[in-house]
Structures are given as C-alpha cells and as structure tokens.
Length: 287
Image 1: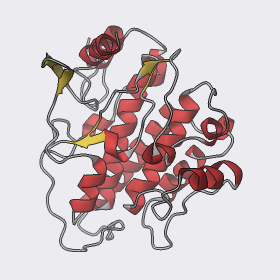
Image 2: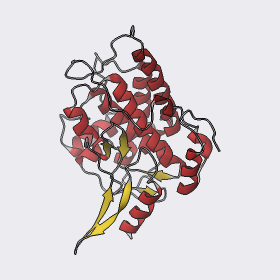
Image 3: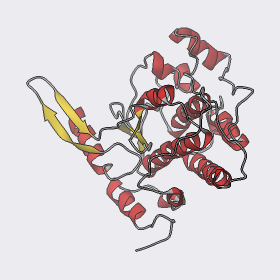
C-alpha cells in the first residue's frame, strides 16, 4: 500500500519542473524500487560542497526553484515533510528538484520519528510534542533552515551531533543559526529566513509569500548582475575565482514570472498541473 501511494503521487507530479520525475517501479525477489530522473550533480549539500562558484545569483535561483516546488505541493494539499539539503537534487543544468518522497503524505497523514539530520530542520513545535499535527508552518520552518544553509554553505548546527542538545537549543533556548557578518545575501532574503524560523508558528510566512519574495529577489539581483557596471555580488563561496557561465536551463529567467499559485486554491493534482500549463513563460494566460 505504501509503494502504491508513492507511485500514485509521483506519477501525477511527473510534469512539474521542480519535482524529480518519476518513470516507474521495478522489483527483485525481495523489494520494490522507484525509478526516477537522474540528477547528475547530486543532492544540494554535495553540490555546494563541491562547487567553487556557488555565487549569490545561483543561491537565489536554487532557493526559488525549491520554493516553486513547495508552492505547487501546497496547491494540491500535499506536504513533503522532509525538507533538507539531502532531499533536494540538482540536475545537470543546475535546476533544484524536490526528491525523496518516502515521508510524503496527504495532509491527514502522520510523521515518523526523526533522525539527527532531520532534527536539524525540525520545527520547535514538533520537537515539543510528538503528536503535533504537521502543517504548512512546519514545512516553512524546515525551508527556512534550508535557506540559511544555502546562504552559508554550512550544515545547520554542524558542531553539534547530539539530538537532545539540538532539541534543547531549538525548542527551549530558541536558538537559530545566525548569518555570518560578511554575508552578502540580500536583506530581504535574510529577513525572510528569520521570519520562516520564528519560534511561534503563527508568525511564519506562507509558502506563497516566500515564493513571491524569492521571485522578486532573484529578478532584482539578476538585473543588477546583467549590468556590466553592477557590483560584485558573490556569496560566501570559499573560492573567489572567475564565475563560470551556467549551463542553459529549459526555463529562462523570464519563466520566474509565474502565475499566482495562491489563486489556484485547492484542487486535484491533475487540475493543478493543467492550470499551470495555461500560462506561458512570462506568466501570461495562453488558453
């Protein structure tokens, strides 16, 4: 039944650009395996640890990719439930895609006991009560922690490998990892991250709002970097060598002017995908 549920969900998400494509299932004598799109550049953590030119523009673009995928899941009432760097895969053209749907459930589903890496992204209300009903605000918190990791290129709470210690710091002491003093991330990005990891779930922004802010951020800083007189907008890359040109993506920069997904309300997966396809890359209605 679990495999069947995964297959049903992944088949219907197949055409969404920021969710890993699902092709089918295979089995040997003892186990079933999901066959998915191959992401040549590995997961997000492997990507930034191995990339010498993880600059500001690319950080914003990857953040926006993830937000777009989460915003689509919101419209069809699905939670990912395990947002972290290892579950974001990067394709050859450096597009970020949500992956590893082993914990995905429709909104009435429960959640499993977390491991150490999951604890680093887990909302304080979930750490407080094991039976807390997972909602969009929990998803936003995890994404907020991931935004910090993208900005800083560091594992959250990487100096602490004790689940109980991290739980105490986050839940009781309300500690969150700060941005480094030399961070060149836009102020609106940093403020968004701070709001996303707010201790009170009611003060966290909605996924649709996060998408809107990141979309505006990316467009703004893309325009600056496209100017020959623009300032150096490199992030916290460990190597300040000349920025390499990125491989072309299927969606060019204008594709970020997407329709307002908030207006979709809640619908079936099929209807949501059809609604998205009614718009061209400029966000204009075409059908």
